[in-house]
Image 1 (cartoon, one colour):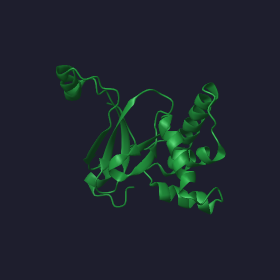
Image 2: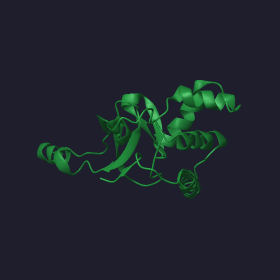
Image 3: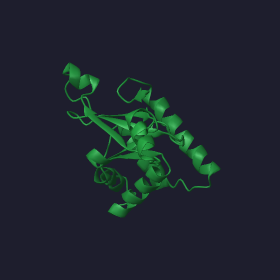
Image 4: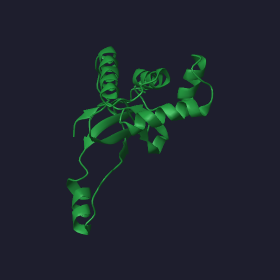
Length: 162
């Protein structure tokens, strides 16, 4: 399981690479990557944390890109449906995907103290879940894994790590 999200990295490069990957994917699949959709993804990438739809809407409103909830929700639906963002059910929030356009099953490591979220790769067909599926004749099509714990900064007592 490769974890991405709690370690330091070149944030500007990370944003550029993610946006470029989404642009290439949208062009290849003839999807409309509208200015609002792009801006919502930029907001998620810039904050590098899970954000609620209304928090995103506040930013869009401040920038003159829309003030009604459907504006944010439509953009988020597009991003989630195409794998460019994920919904964190526990937080009722959204986070940019660390591997946009790639087919993968993410697992989310959620800090119970600061709500920081790291995305890791999970393989639901392996391990206990996979064995349970095989034993019952079940075919896993989609899985959402959210683990709650403490991020490295909170474990060390670093304040306000989000």
